Image (cartoon, rainbow, N blue to C red; front, side):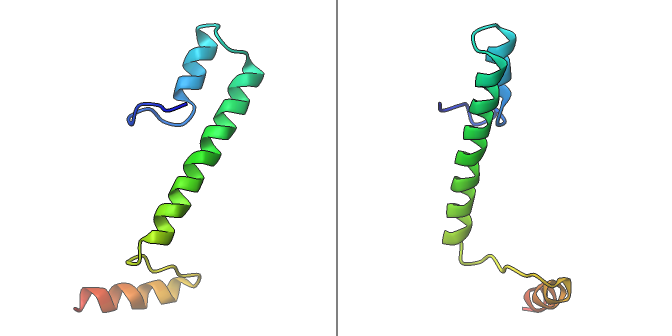
Length: 71
């Protein structure tokens, strides 16, 4: 179910539904599946990117940004 890079998740599925080639239930299933696949790709990308600084407290973010800007 590879889509074009410039198509958002669900675009192709809705297009197929409006063309009458798949049902609404199938559309929902495909959108959920595509969303889960995209989320998995994003999680993998984030795990491999060591330059990302994850924060839970906004004040930590300010400190990190200030430190990076002062380098």
